[in-house]
Image (cartoon, rainbow, N blue to C red; front, side, top):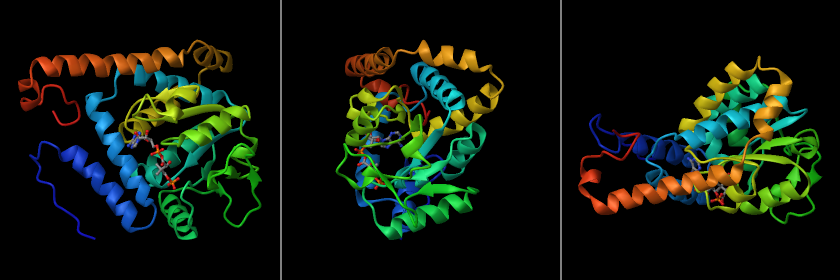
Length: 269
Ligand code: PTJ
């Protein structure tokens, strides 16, 4: 694999470094070929939100953390992209919230599952659920490989965090009564619109913030956590993210010079 050295002063340094993580994950078999394409789609939407964590995402992060902390049996689903981009942070979030990690792949290959298992273990994970060497439960609404879930994990969970998820499974998880949290840069994806909480942000920025919020909110009383969850309106959250994109495009279309000055791109300012 060719690894590139990105110069310190490169205006797209942060974005290119994230891309390198995905490419590395692909070369070590964690990431599916389609995962590279999914990442590119994410990059395009990240441009539209200004490559920063906006207020609507910060609010959704707090709600997502409250839902995980107040759940009876929360579970965090891990796929190839998640593992390549935020292995340590996903393990930390799992530990703080008490939500076990479950490997669940759309493009299943044993080699990929093994690679993800290894990467999560070296990131500090002690227990990892999944269908590897265990009997699986089936989500009847689904046809893809993701229909196989761990009966002790997603199978019996009340709250599931499914970052960078495909739409079919989100719909299926909703159909069997799960409370679904996702992280998705595209507020128009089926996953984004079917989920109960959608964090419209890059998982790279959002996971460290979730870990921080979870450490803070761990002592919040249970009834307060429930109130935070109940008061959340995901449709408004999605509408706010689309409004931001619309406003940014409006501003930029009036003055392309803003892009040359990098005035409207957060992460690379
Ligand atoms: O590892 P596997 O086999 O389970 O496959 C994983 C992928 C991501 C390939 C699979 O779940 C898939 O095909 O997903 P989709 O349907 O392409 O959806 C992925 C969503 O994640 C898209 O809406 C992207 O915009 C979004 N996305 C991509 N990169 C990021 C992201 N959202 C947040 N942070 C990102 N870095």
